[in-house]
Amino acid sequence: MEKFHKSERLCSRKTIALLFEKGSIFYTSLFKIVWTAAAGTEEYPARVAFSIPKKSFRKATERNLIRRRIREAYRKNKKILYEALTSAGASVAFIIIYRGQTIPDYLSVEHSMTELLGKLPAEVSKRDSKC
Figure 1: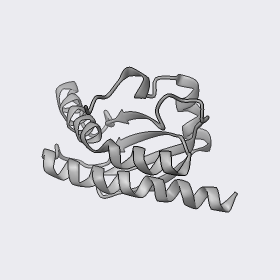
Figure 2: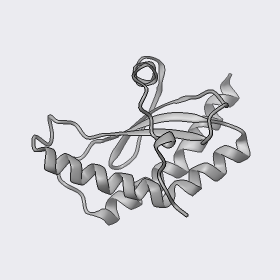
Figure 3: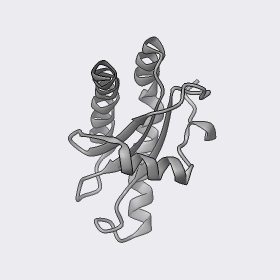
Figure 4: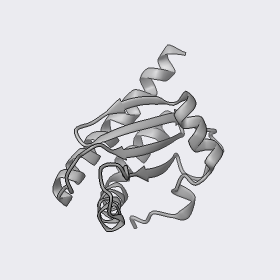
């Protein structure tokens, strides 16, 4: 079953602050991703938070709609990321920040999400090989 559990969400203010201080960044067509390697003691290989800037979308209803679409696309496609991270024995924490200026349709969000979830393990392995 494809569920998005509370323990998969990134809620810790300390971890989020650490992400913005020392995290690595990459971009996809719709998103900016700030990520860092996490401790391997997590129940899930990835912990995620979603952000939609208030500067671009003043109404909370618009931000909530975008956030729901992003969360649903992540929930349906996270197995791509989980398989790659578990095979590499890695664990990550990351924030997905929406960069668009208009409310996207679900299909474009899902396409960009699959692009993101395919690119993140490559970024993690590239960073691990440098260390």
